[in-house]
Image 1 (cartoon, rainbow, N blue to C red):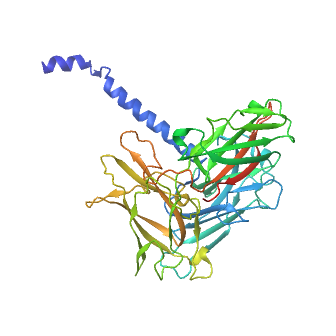
Image 2: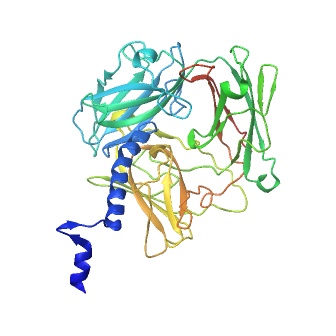
Image 3: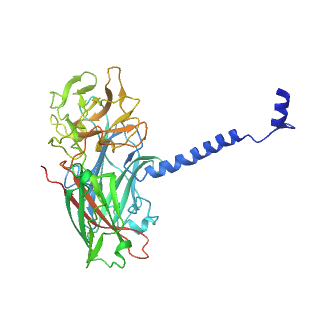
Length: 439
């Protein structure tokens, strides 16, 4: 029997077609092909590619932690700051690339969207001072004499090592607007009776008198997002109706978003005393901070809390310059989710980690029924929230542990994109930021 089976599999020493081996080989080839495309897709999002890179800040210099949008041709700048815990100094370069509204490369020559050089080196760096954790702090301001955008639109800022863009260190999304339209918006309760107590509906009007718009249904589209979180965004491709040179977006079925809840927060501006959410601080050869336990906040009624809409601020009130004398600490979080690993997994997110759901933001389950994790974070004020990923659906749910309420105070960003007929790129022609009124 064995000899017969062997004869059927081999003919004159040549192995006969094996379907299982072929499927395994095809799966391996698909995985190898997928990895570069995954890296390419990540290069157009806010991503940190090196584990030693921490505390990335990117904002308009007019206000710390503000949305990274600047007006083309103005004196506005954005500031990029980050720490390298590996110490020493790296040979870091940067550039920006023009993208469309969906964050795909516009595939333009750099000469078409850059006024000067194609890339430049980061020369502004300093070493930490009087800290347990040694690090090198890098800073960069854009536009500058060497790198400046020529066209309005979305740009991805890339920082990479040794002048090689294949060695990416981090990427940030930059918005350059030429304010050619005006945007006015309001936030009301949901038109849907079932979601009236949980959702916020954004209605807005775009006045485009300064643009040559041939077809409003295709030349203009508007992206709406909550608290600068792209994953919450909605793209409006077609207005509800057109009135003169105004586009009205108020259909009952569009821009109806969960209000969610105010963010949780903690304050480590000083490591010498416990603040509101701090249980214990230990200082020896390193800093260790244990936070008070976090409860499940999915309750029937809204509770007023003040937050920073997911932002974080690097501050050391006991030092002189938080950029180089703020220290790092192991922050210990624990969550009473009233859920078990058989149901799913919680993740901790905020602007400090780009709201990423990965192994570093994943919580572990202990034998007393609580979830826990520790993060290595720089001193400051942090907003954070928990996202639940059920085993059944694998779909992130950011309301089951936090709650969902119409009364929540949120900021909304409205970005108006314009592509005239025959154009090769998409412009950012308008920007507005509106906020709900605190109850």
